[in-house]
Image (cartoon, rainbow, N blue to C red; front, side, top):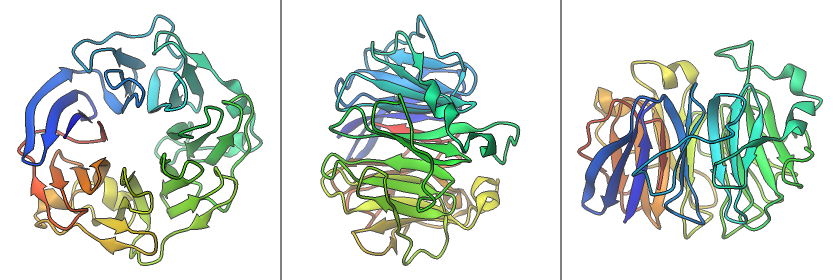
Length: 324
């Protein structure tokens, strides 16, 4: 079905995921402090990994070998990555909050300084490290390479219509604590927001937003995914708050599905302590197929949009990000 790259907070593990589970798991990048990953939608062998303190790693052969850029981002803490469908551009978001772009498959990166010139920038601050802040998520328009939105943790959702040369500041209709921003080629102007205060949607490239929380019984949303064939079907992982979500005990978390109006819980797997950890990563592999990665390393797979689940037999220390 798909070749999956799983980030554990340190390593990158690659495996083949199909209807029977996972096969061929191997660590393809070890001990680098990996925290995020993206696969190019234009060239599937092109994989990018961001690390907590060692910058970017790039593979041109689907993880068989890796290299670092000749001209890397000046900031070594890379917490967000996104590769464009519309152009040969890859974006990296860092701590402190800077946005970099590569147009040569990751060999060199240029900073887009206008992001830090926004009026709200002096108020940006990440609660876990209040002296700083970071780009937590990047979403790119599927057709227009000039359109992009980024989420600053904690600062808001910023949008550009000229490839990052200039920016419009946070619209308070959106949530300010964006953890994940998503787009879909079936509705190219739509942006989905998964945030610490809830979830929201924009149908005009981020110009205006509407909250989409009807039915949710908790609001601290962390990860999201959209069905590849149905842009109205999307998934979020939600907890009752950050201390539960990121603590070492019961995550008080659930996975929910929306089919266009309202939300329904779909996490029908057994609620053992290990399976109640926060779902840190959601990956919609194919229509109806959803892979869920939990804090603590468990992976669960559904082939019917959350109707039933199986646990993959992989021993992982953690799961913090997924890409395919």
